[in-house]
Structures are given as structure tokens and as C-alpha cells.
Image (cartoon, rainbow, N blue to C red; front, side, top):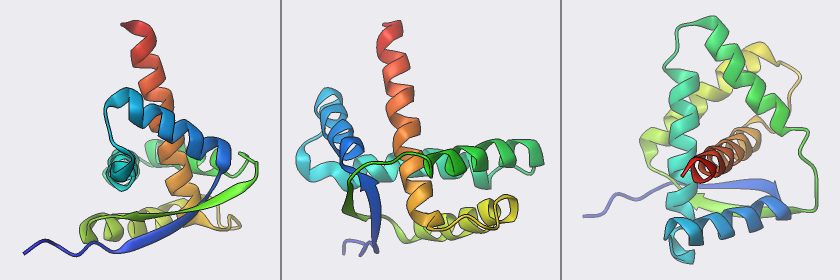
Length: 130
């Protein structure tokens, strides 16, 4: 039986949503695989935050999340489905980010937004080097 994935909602700028769609096409994903694309991006960033006992690295990745709060635009709510384990990792990352930025609001959405931006920039850098 297929694992039931919890649904998450996140507010992201429409321009970022468009960038995801464009990148998905370039990477060979269909429109129906947006959750998978975001889940992969999220997994990558969460591994960087949660799997580091090094406080400097935790701060570095938490800073990426804080920087995502400065990305503005008309927002769009996206719904993604992620594995339960990843949802747990997201909850742990929220605690870490709040440790460094206690006044930051909407941390879950910001982590999702930061993971999207991180993946888009990483892909863009790889594409330029090919």
C-alpha cells in the first residue's frame, strides 16, 4: 500500500512559482510532479540544517531561511505532499531556525521558500558550467 503523504501549504511569490515550473520542464518533470520537485529541494536544505552539529553551519543555513523572508511579490499558496519523515525533519529545522531568529514568522513557509531558491540557484550554476 502506498504511504499517505501529509500535505503542506506554503505561501511563495508567484514569480518563484513560475521559476519552479520553468525549471521543472528543463529538468524533465511533468506538472504533476511539483510536490516531488519541492520535496527534493526541501530534503536537500533540511539535511544541511538538521545534520550539522556545527553551530556555524546551522547558522549559515538558518541565514538562508531568514534571507528568504526578504523575497517579496504577489503570493501564491502551493500545496505539496511530502513523506512523514521529511515533515518531522521540517519540524526539527523550524526549531533550529527559531533558535537563531526567534522573531522570524512563518518559518515553515520560509524554509520551503529557501529550499526552492537554493535548488533553483544550484541548478542554474550547474547549467552555466556545462
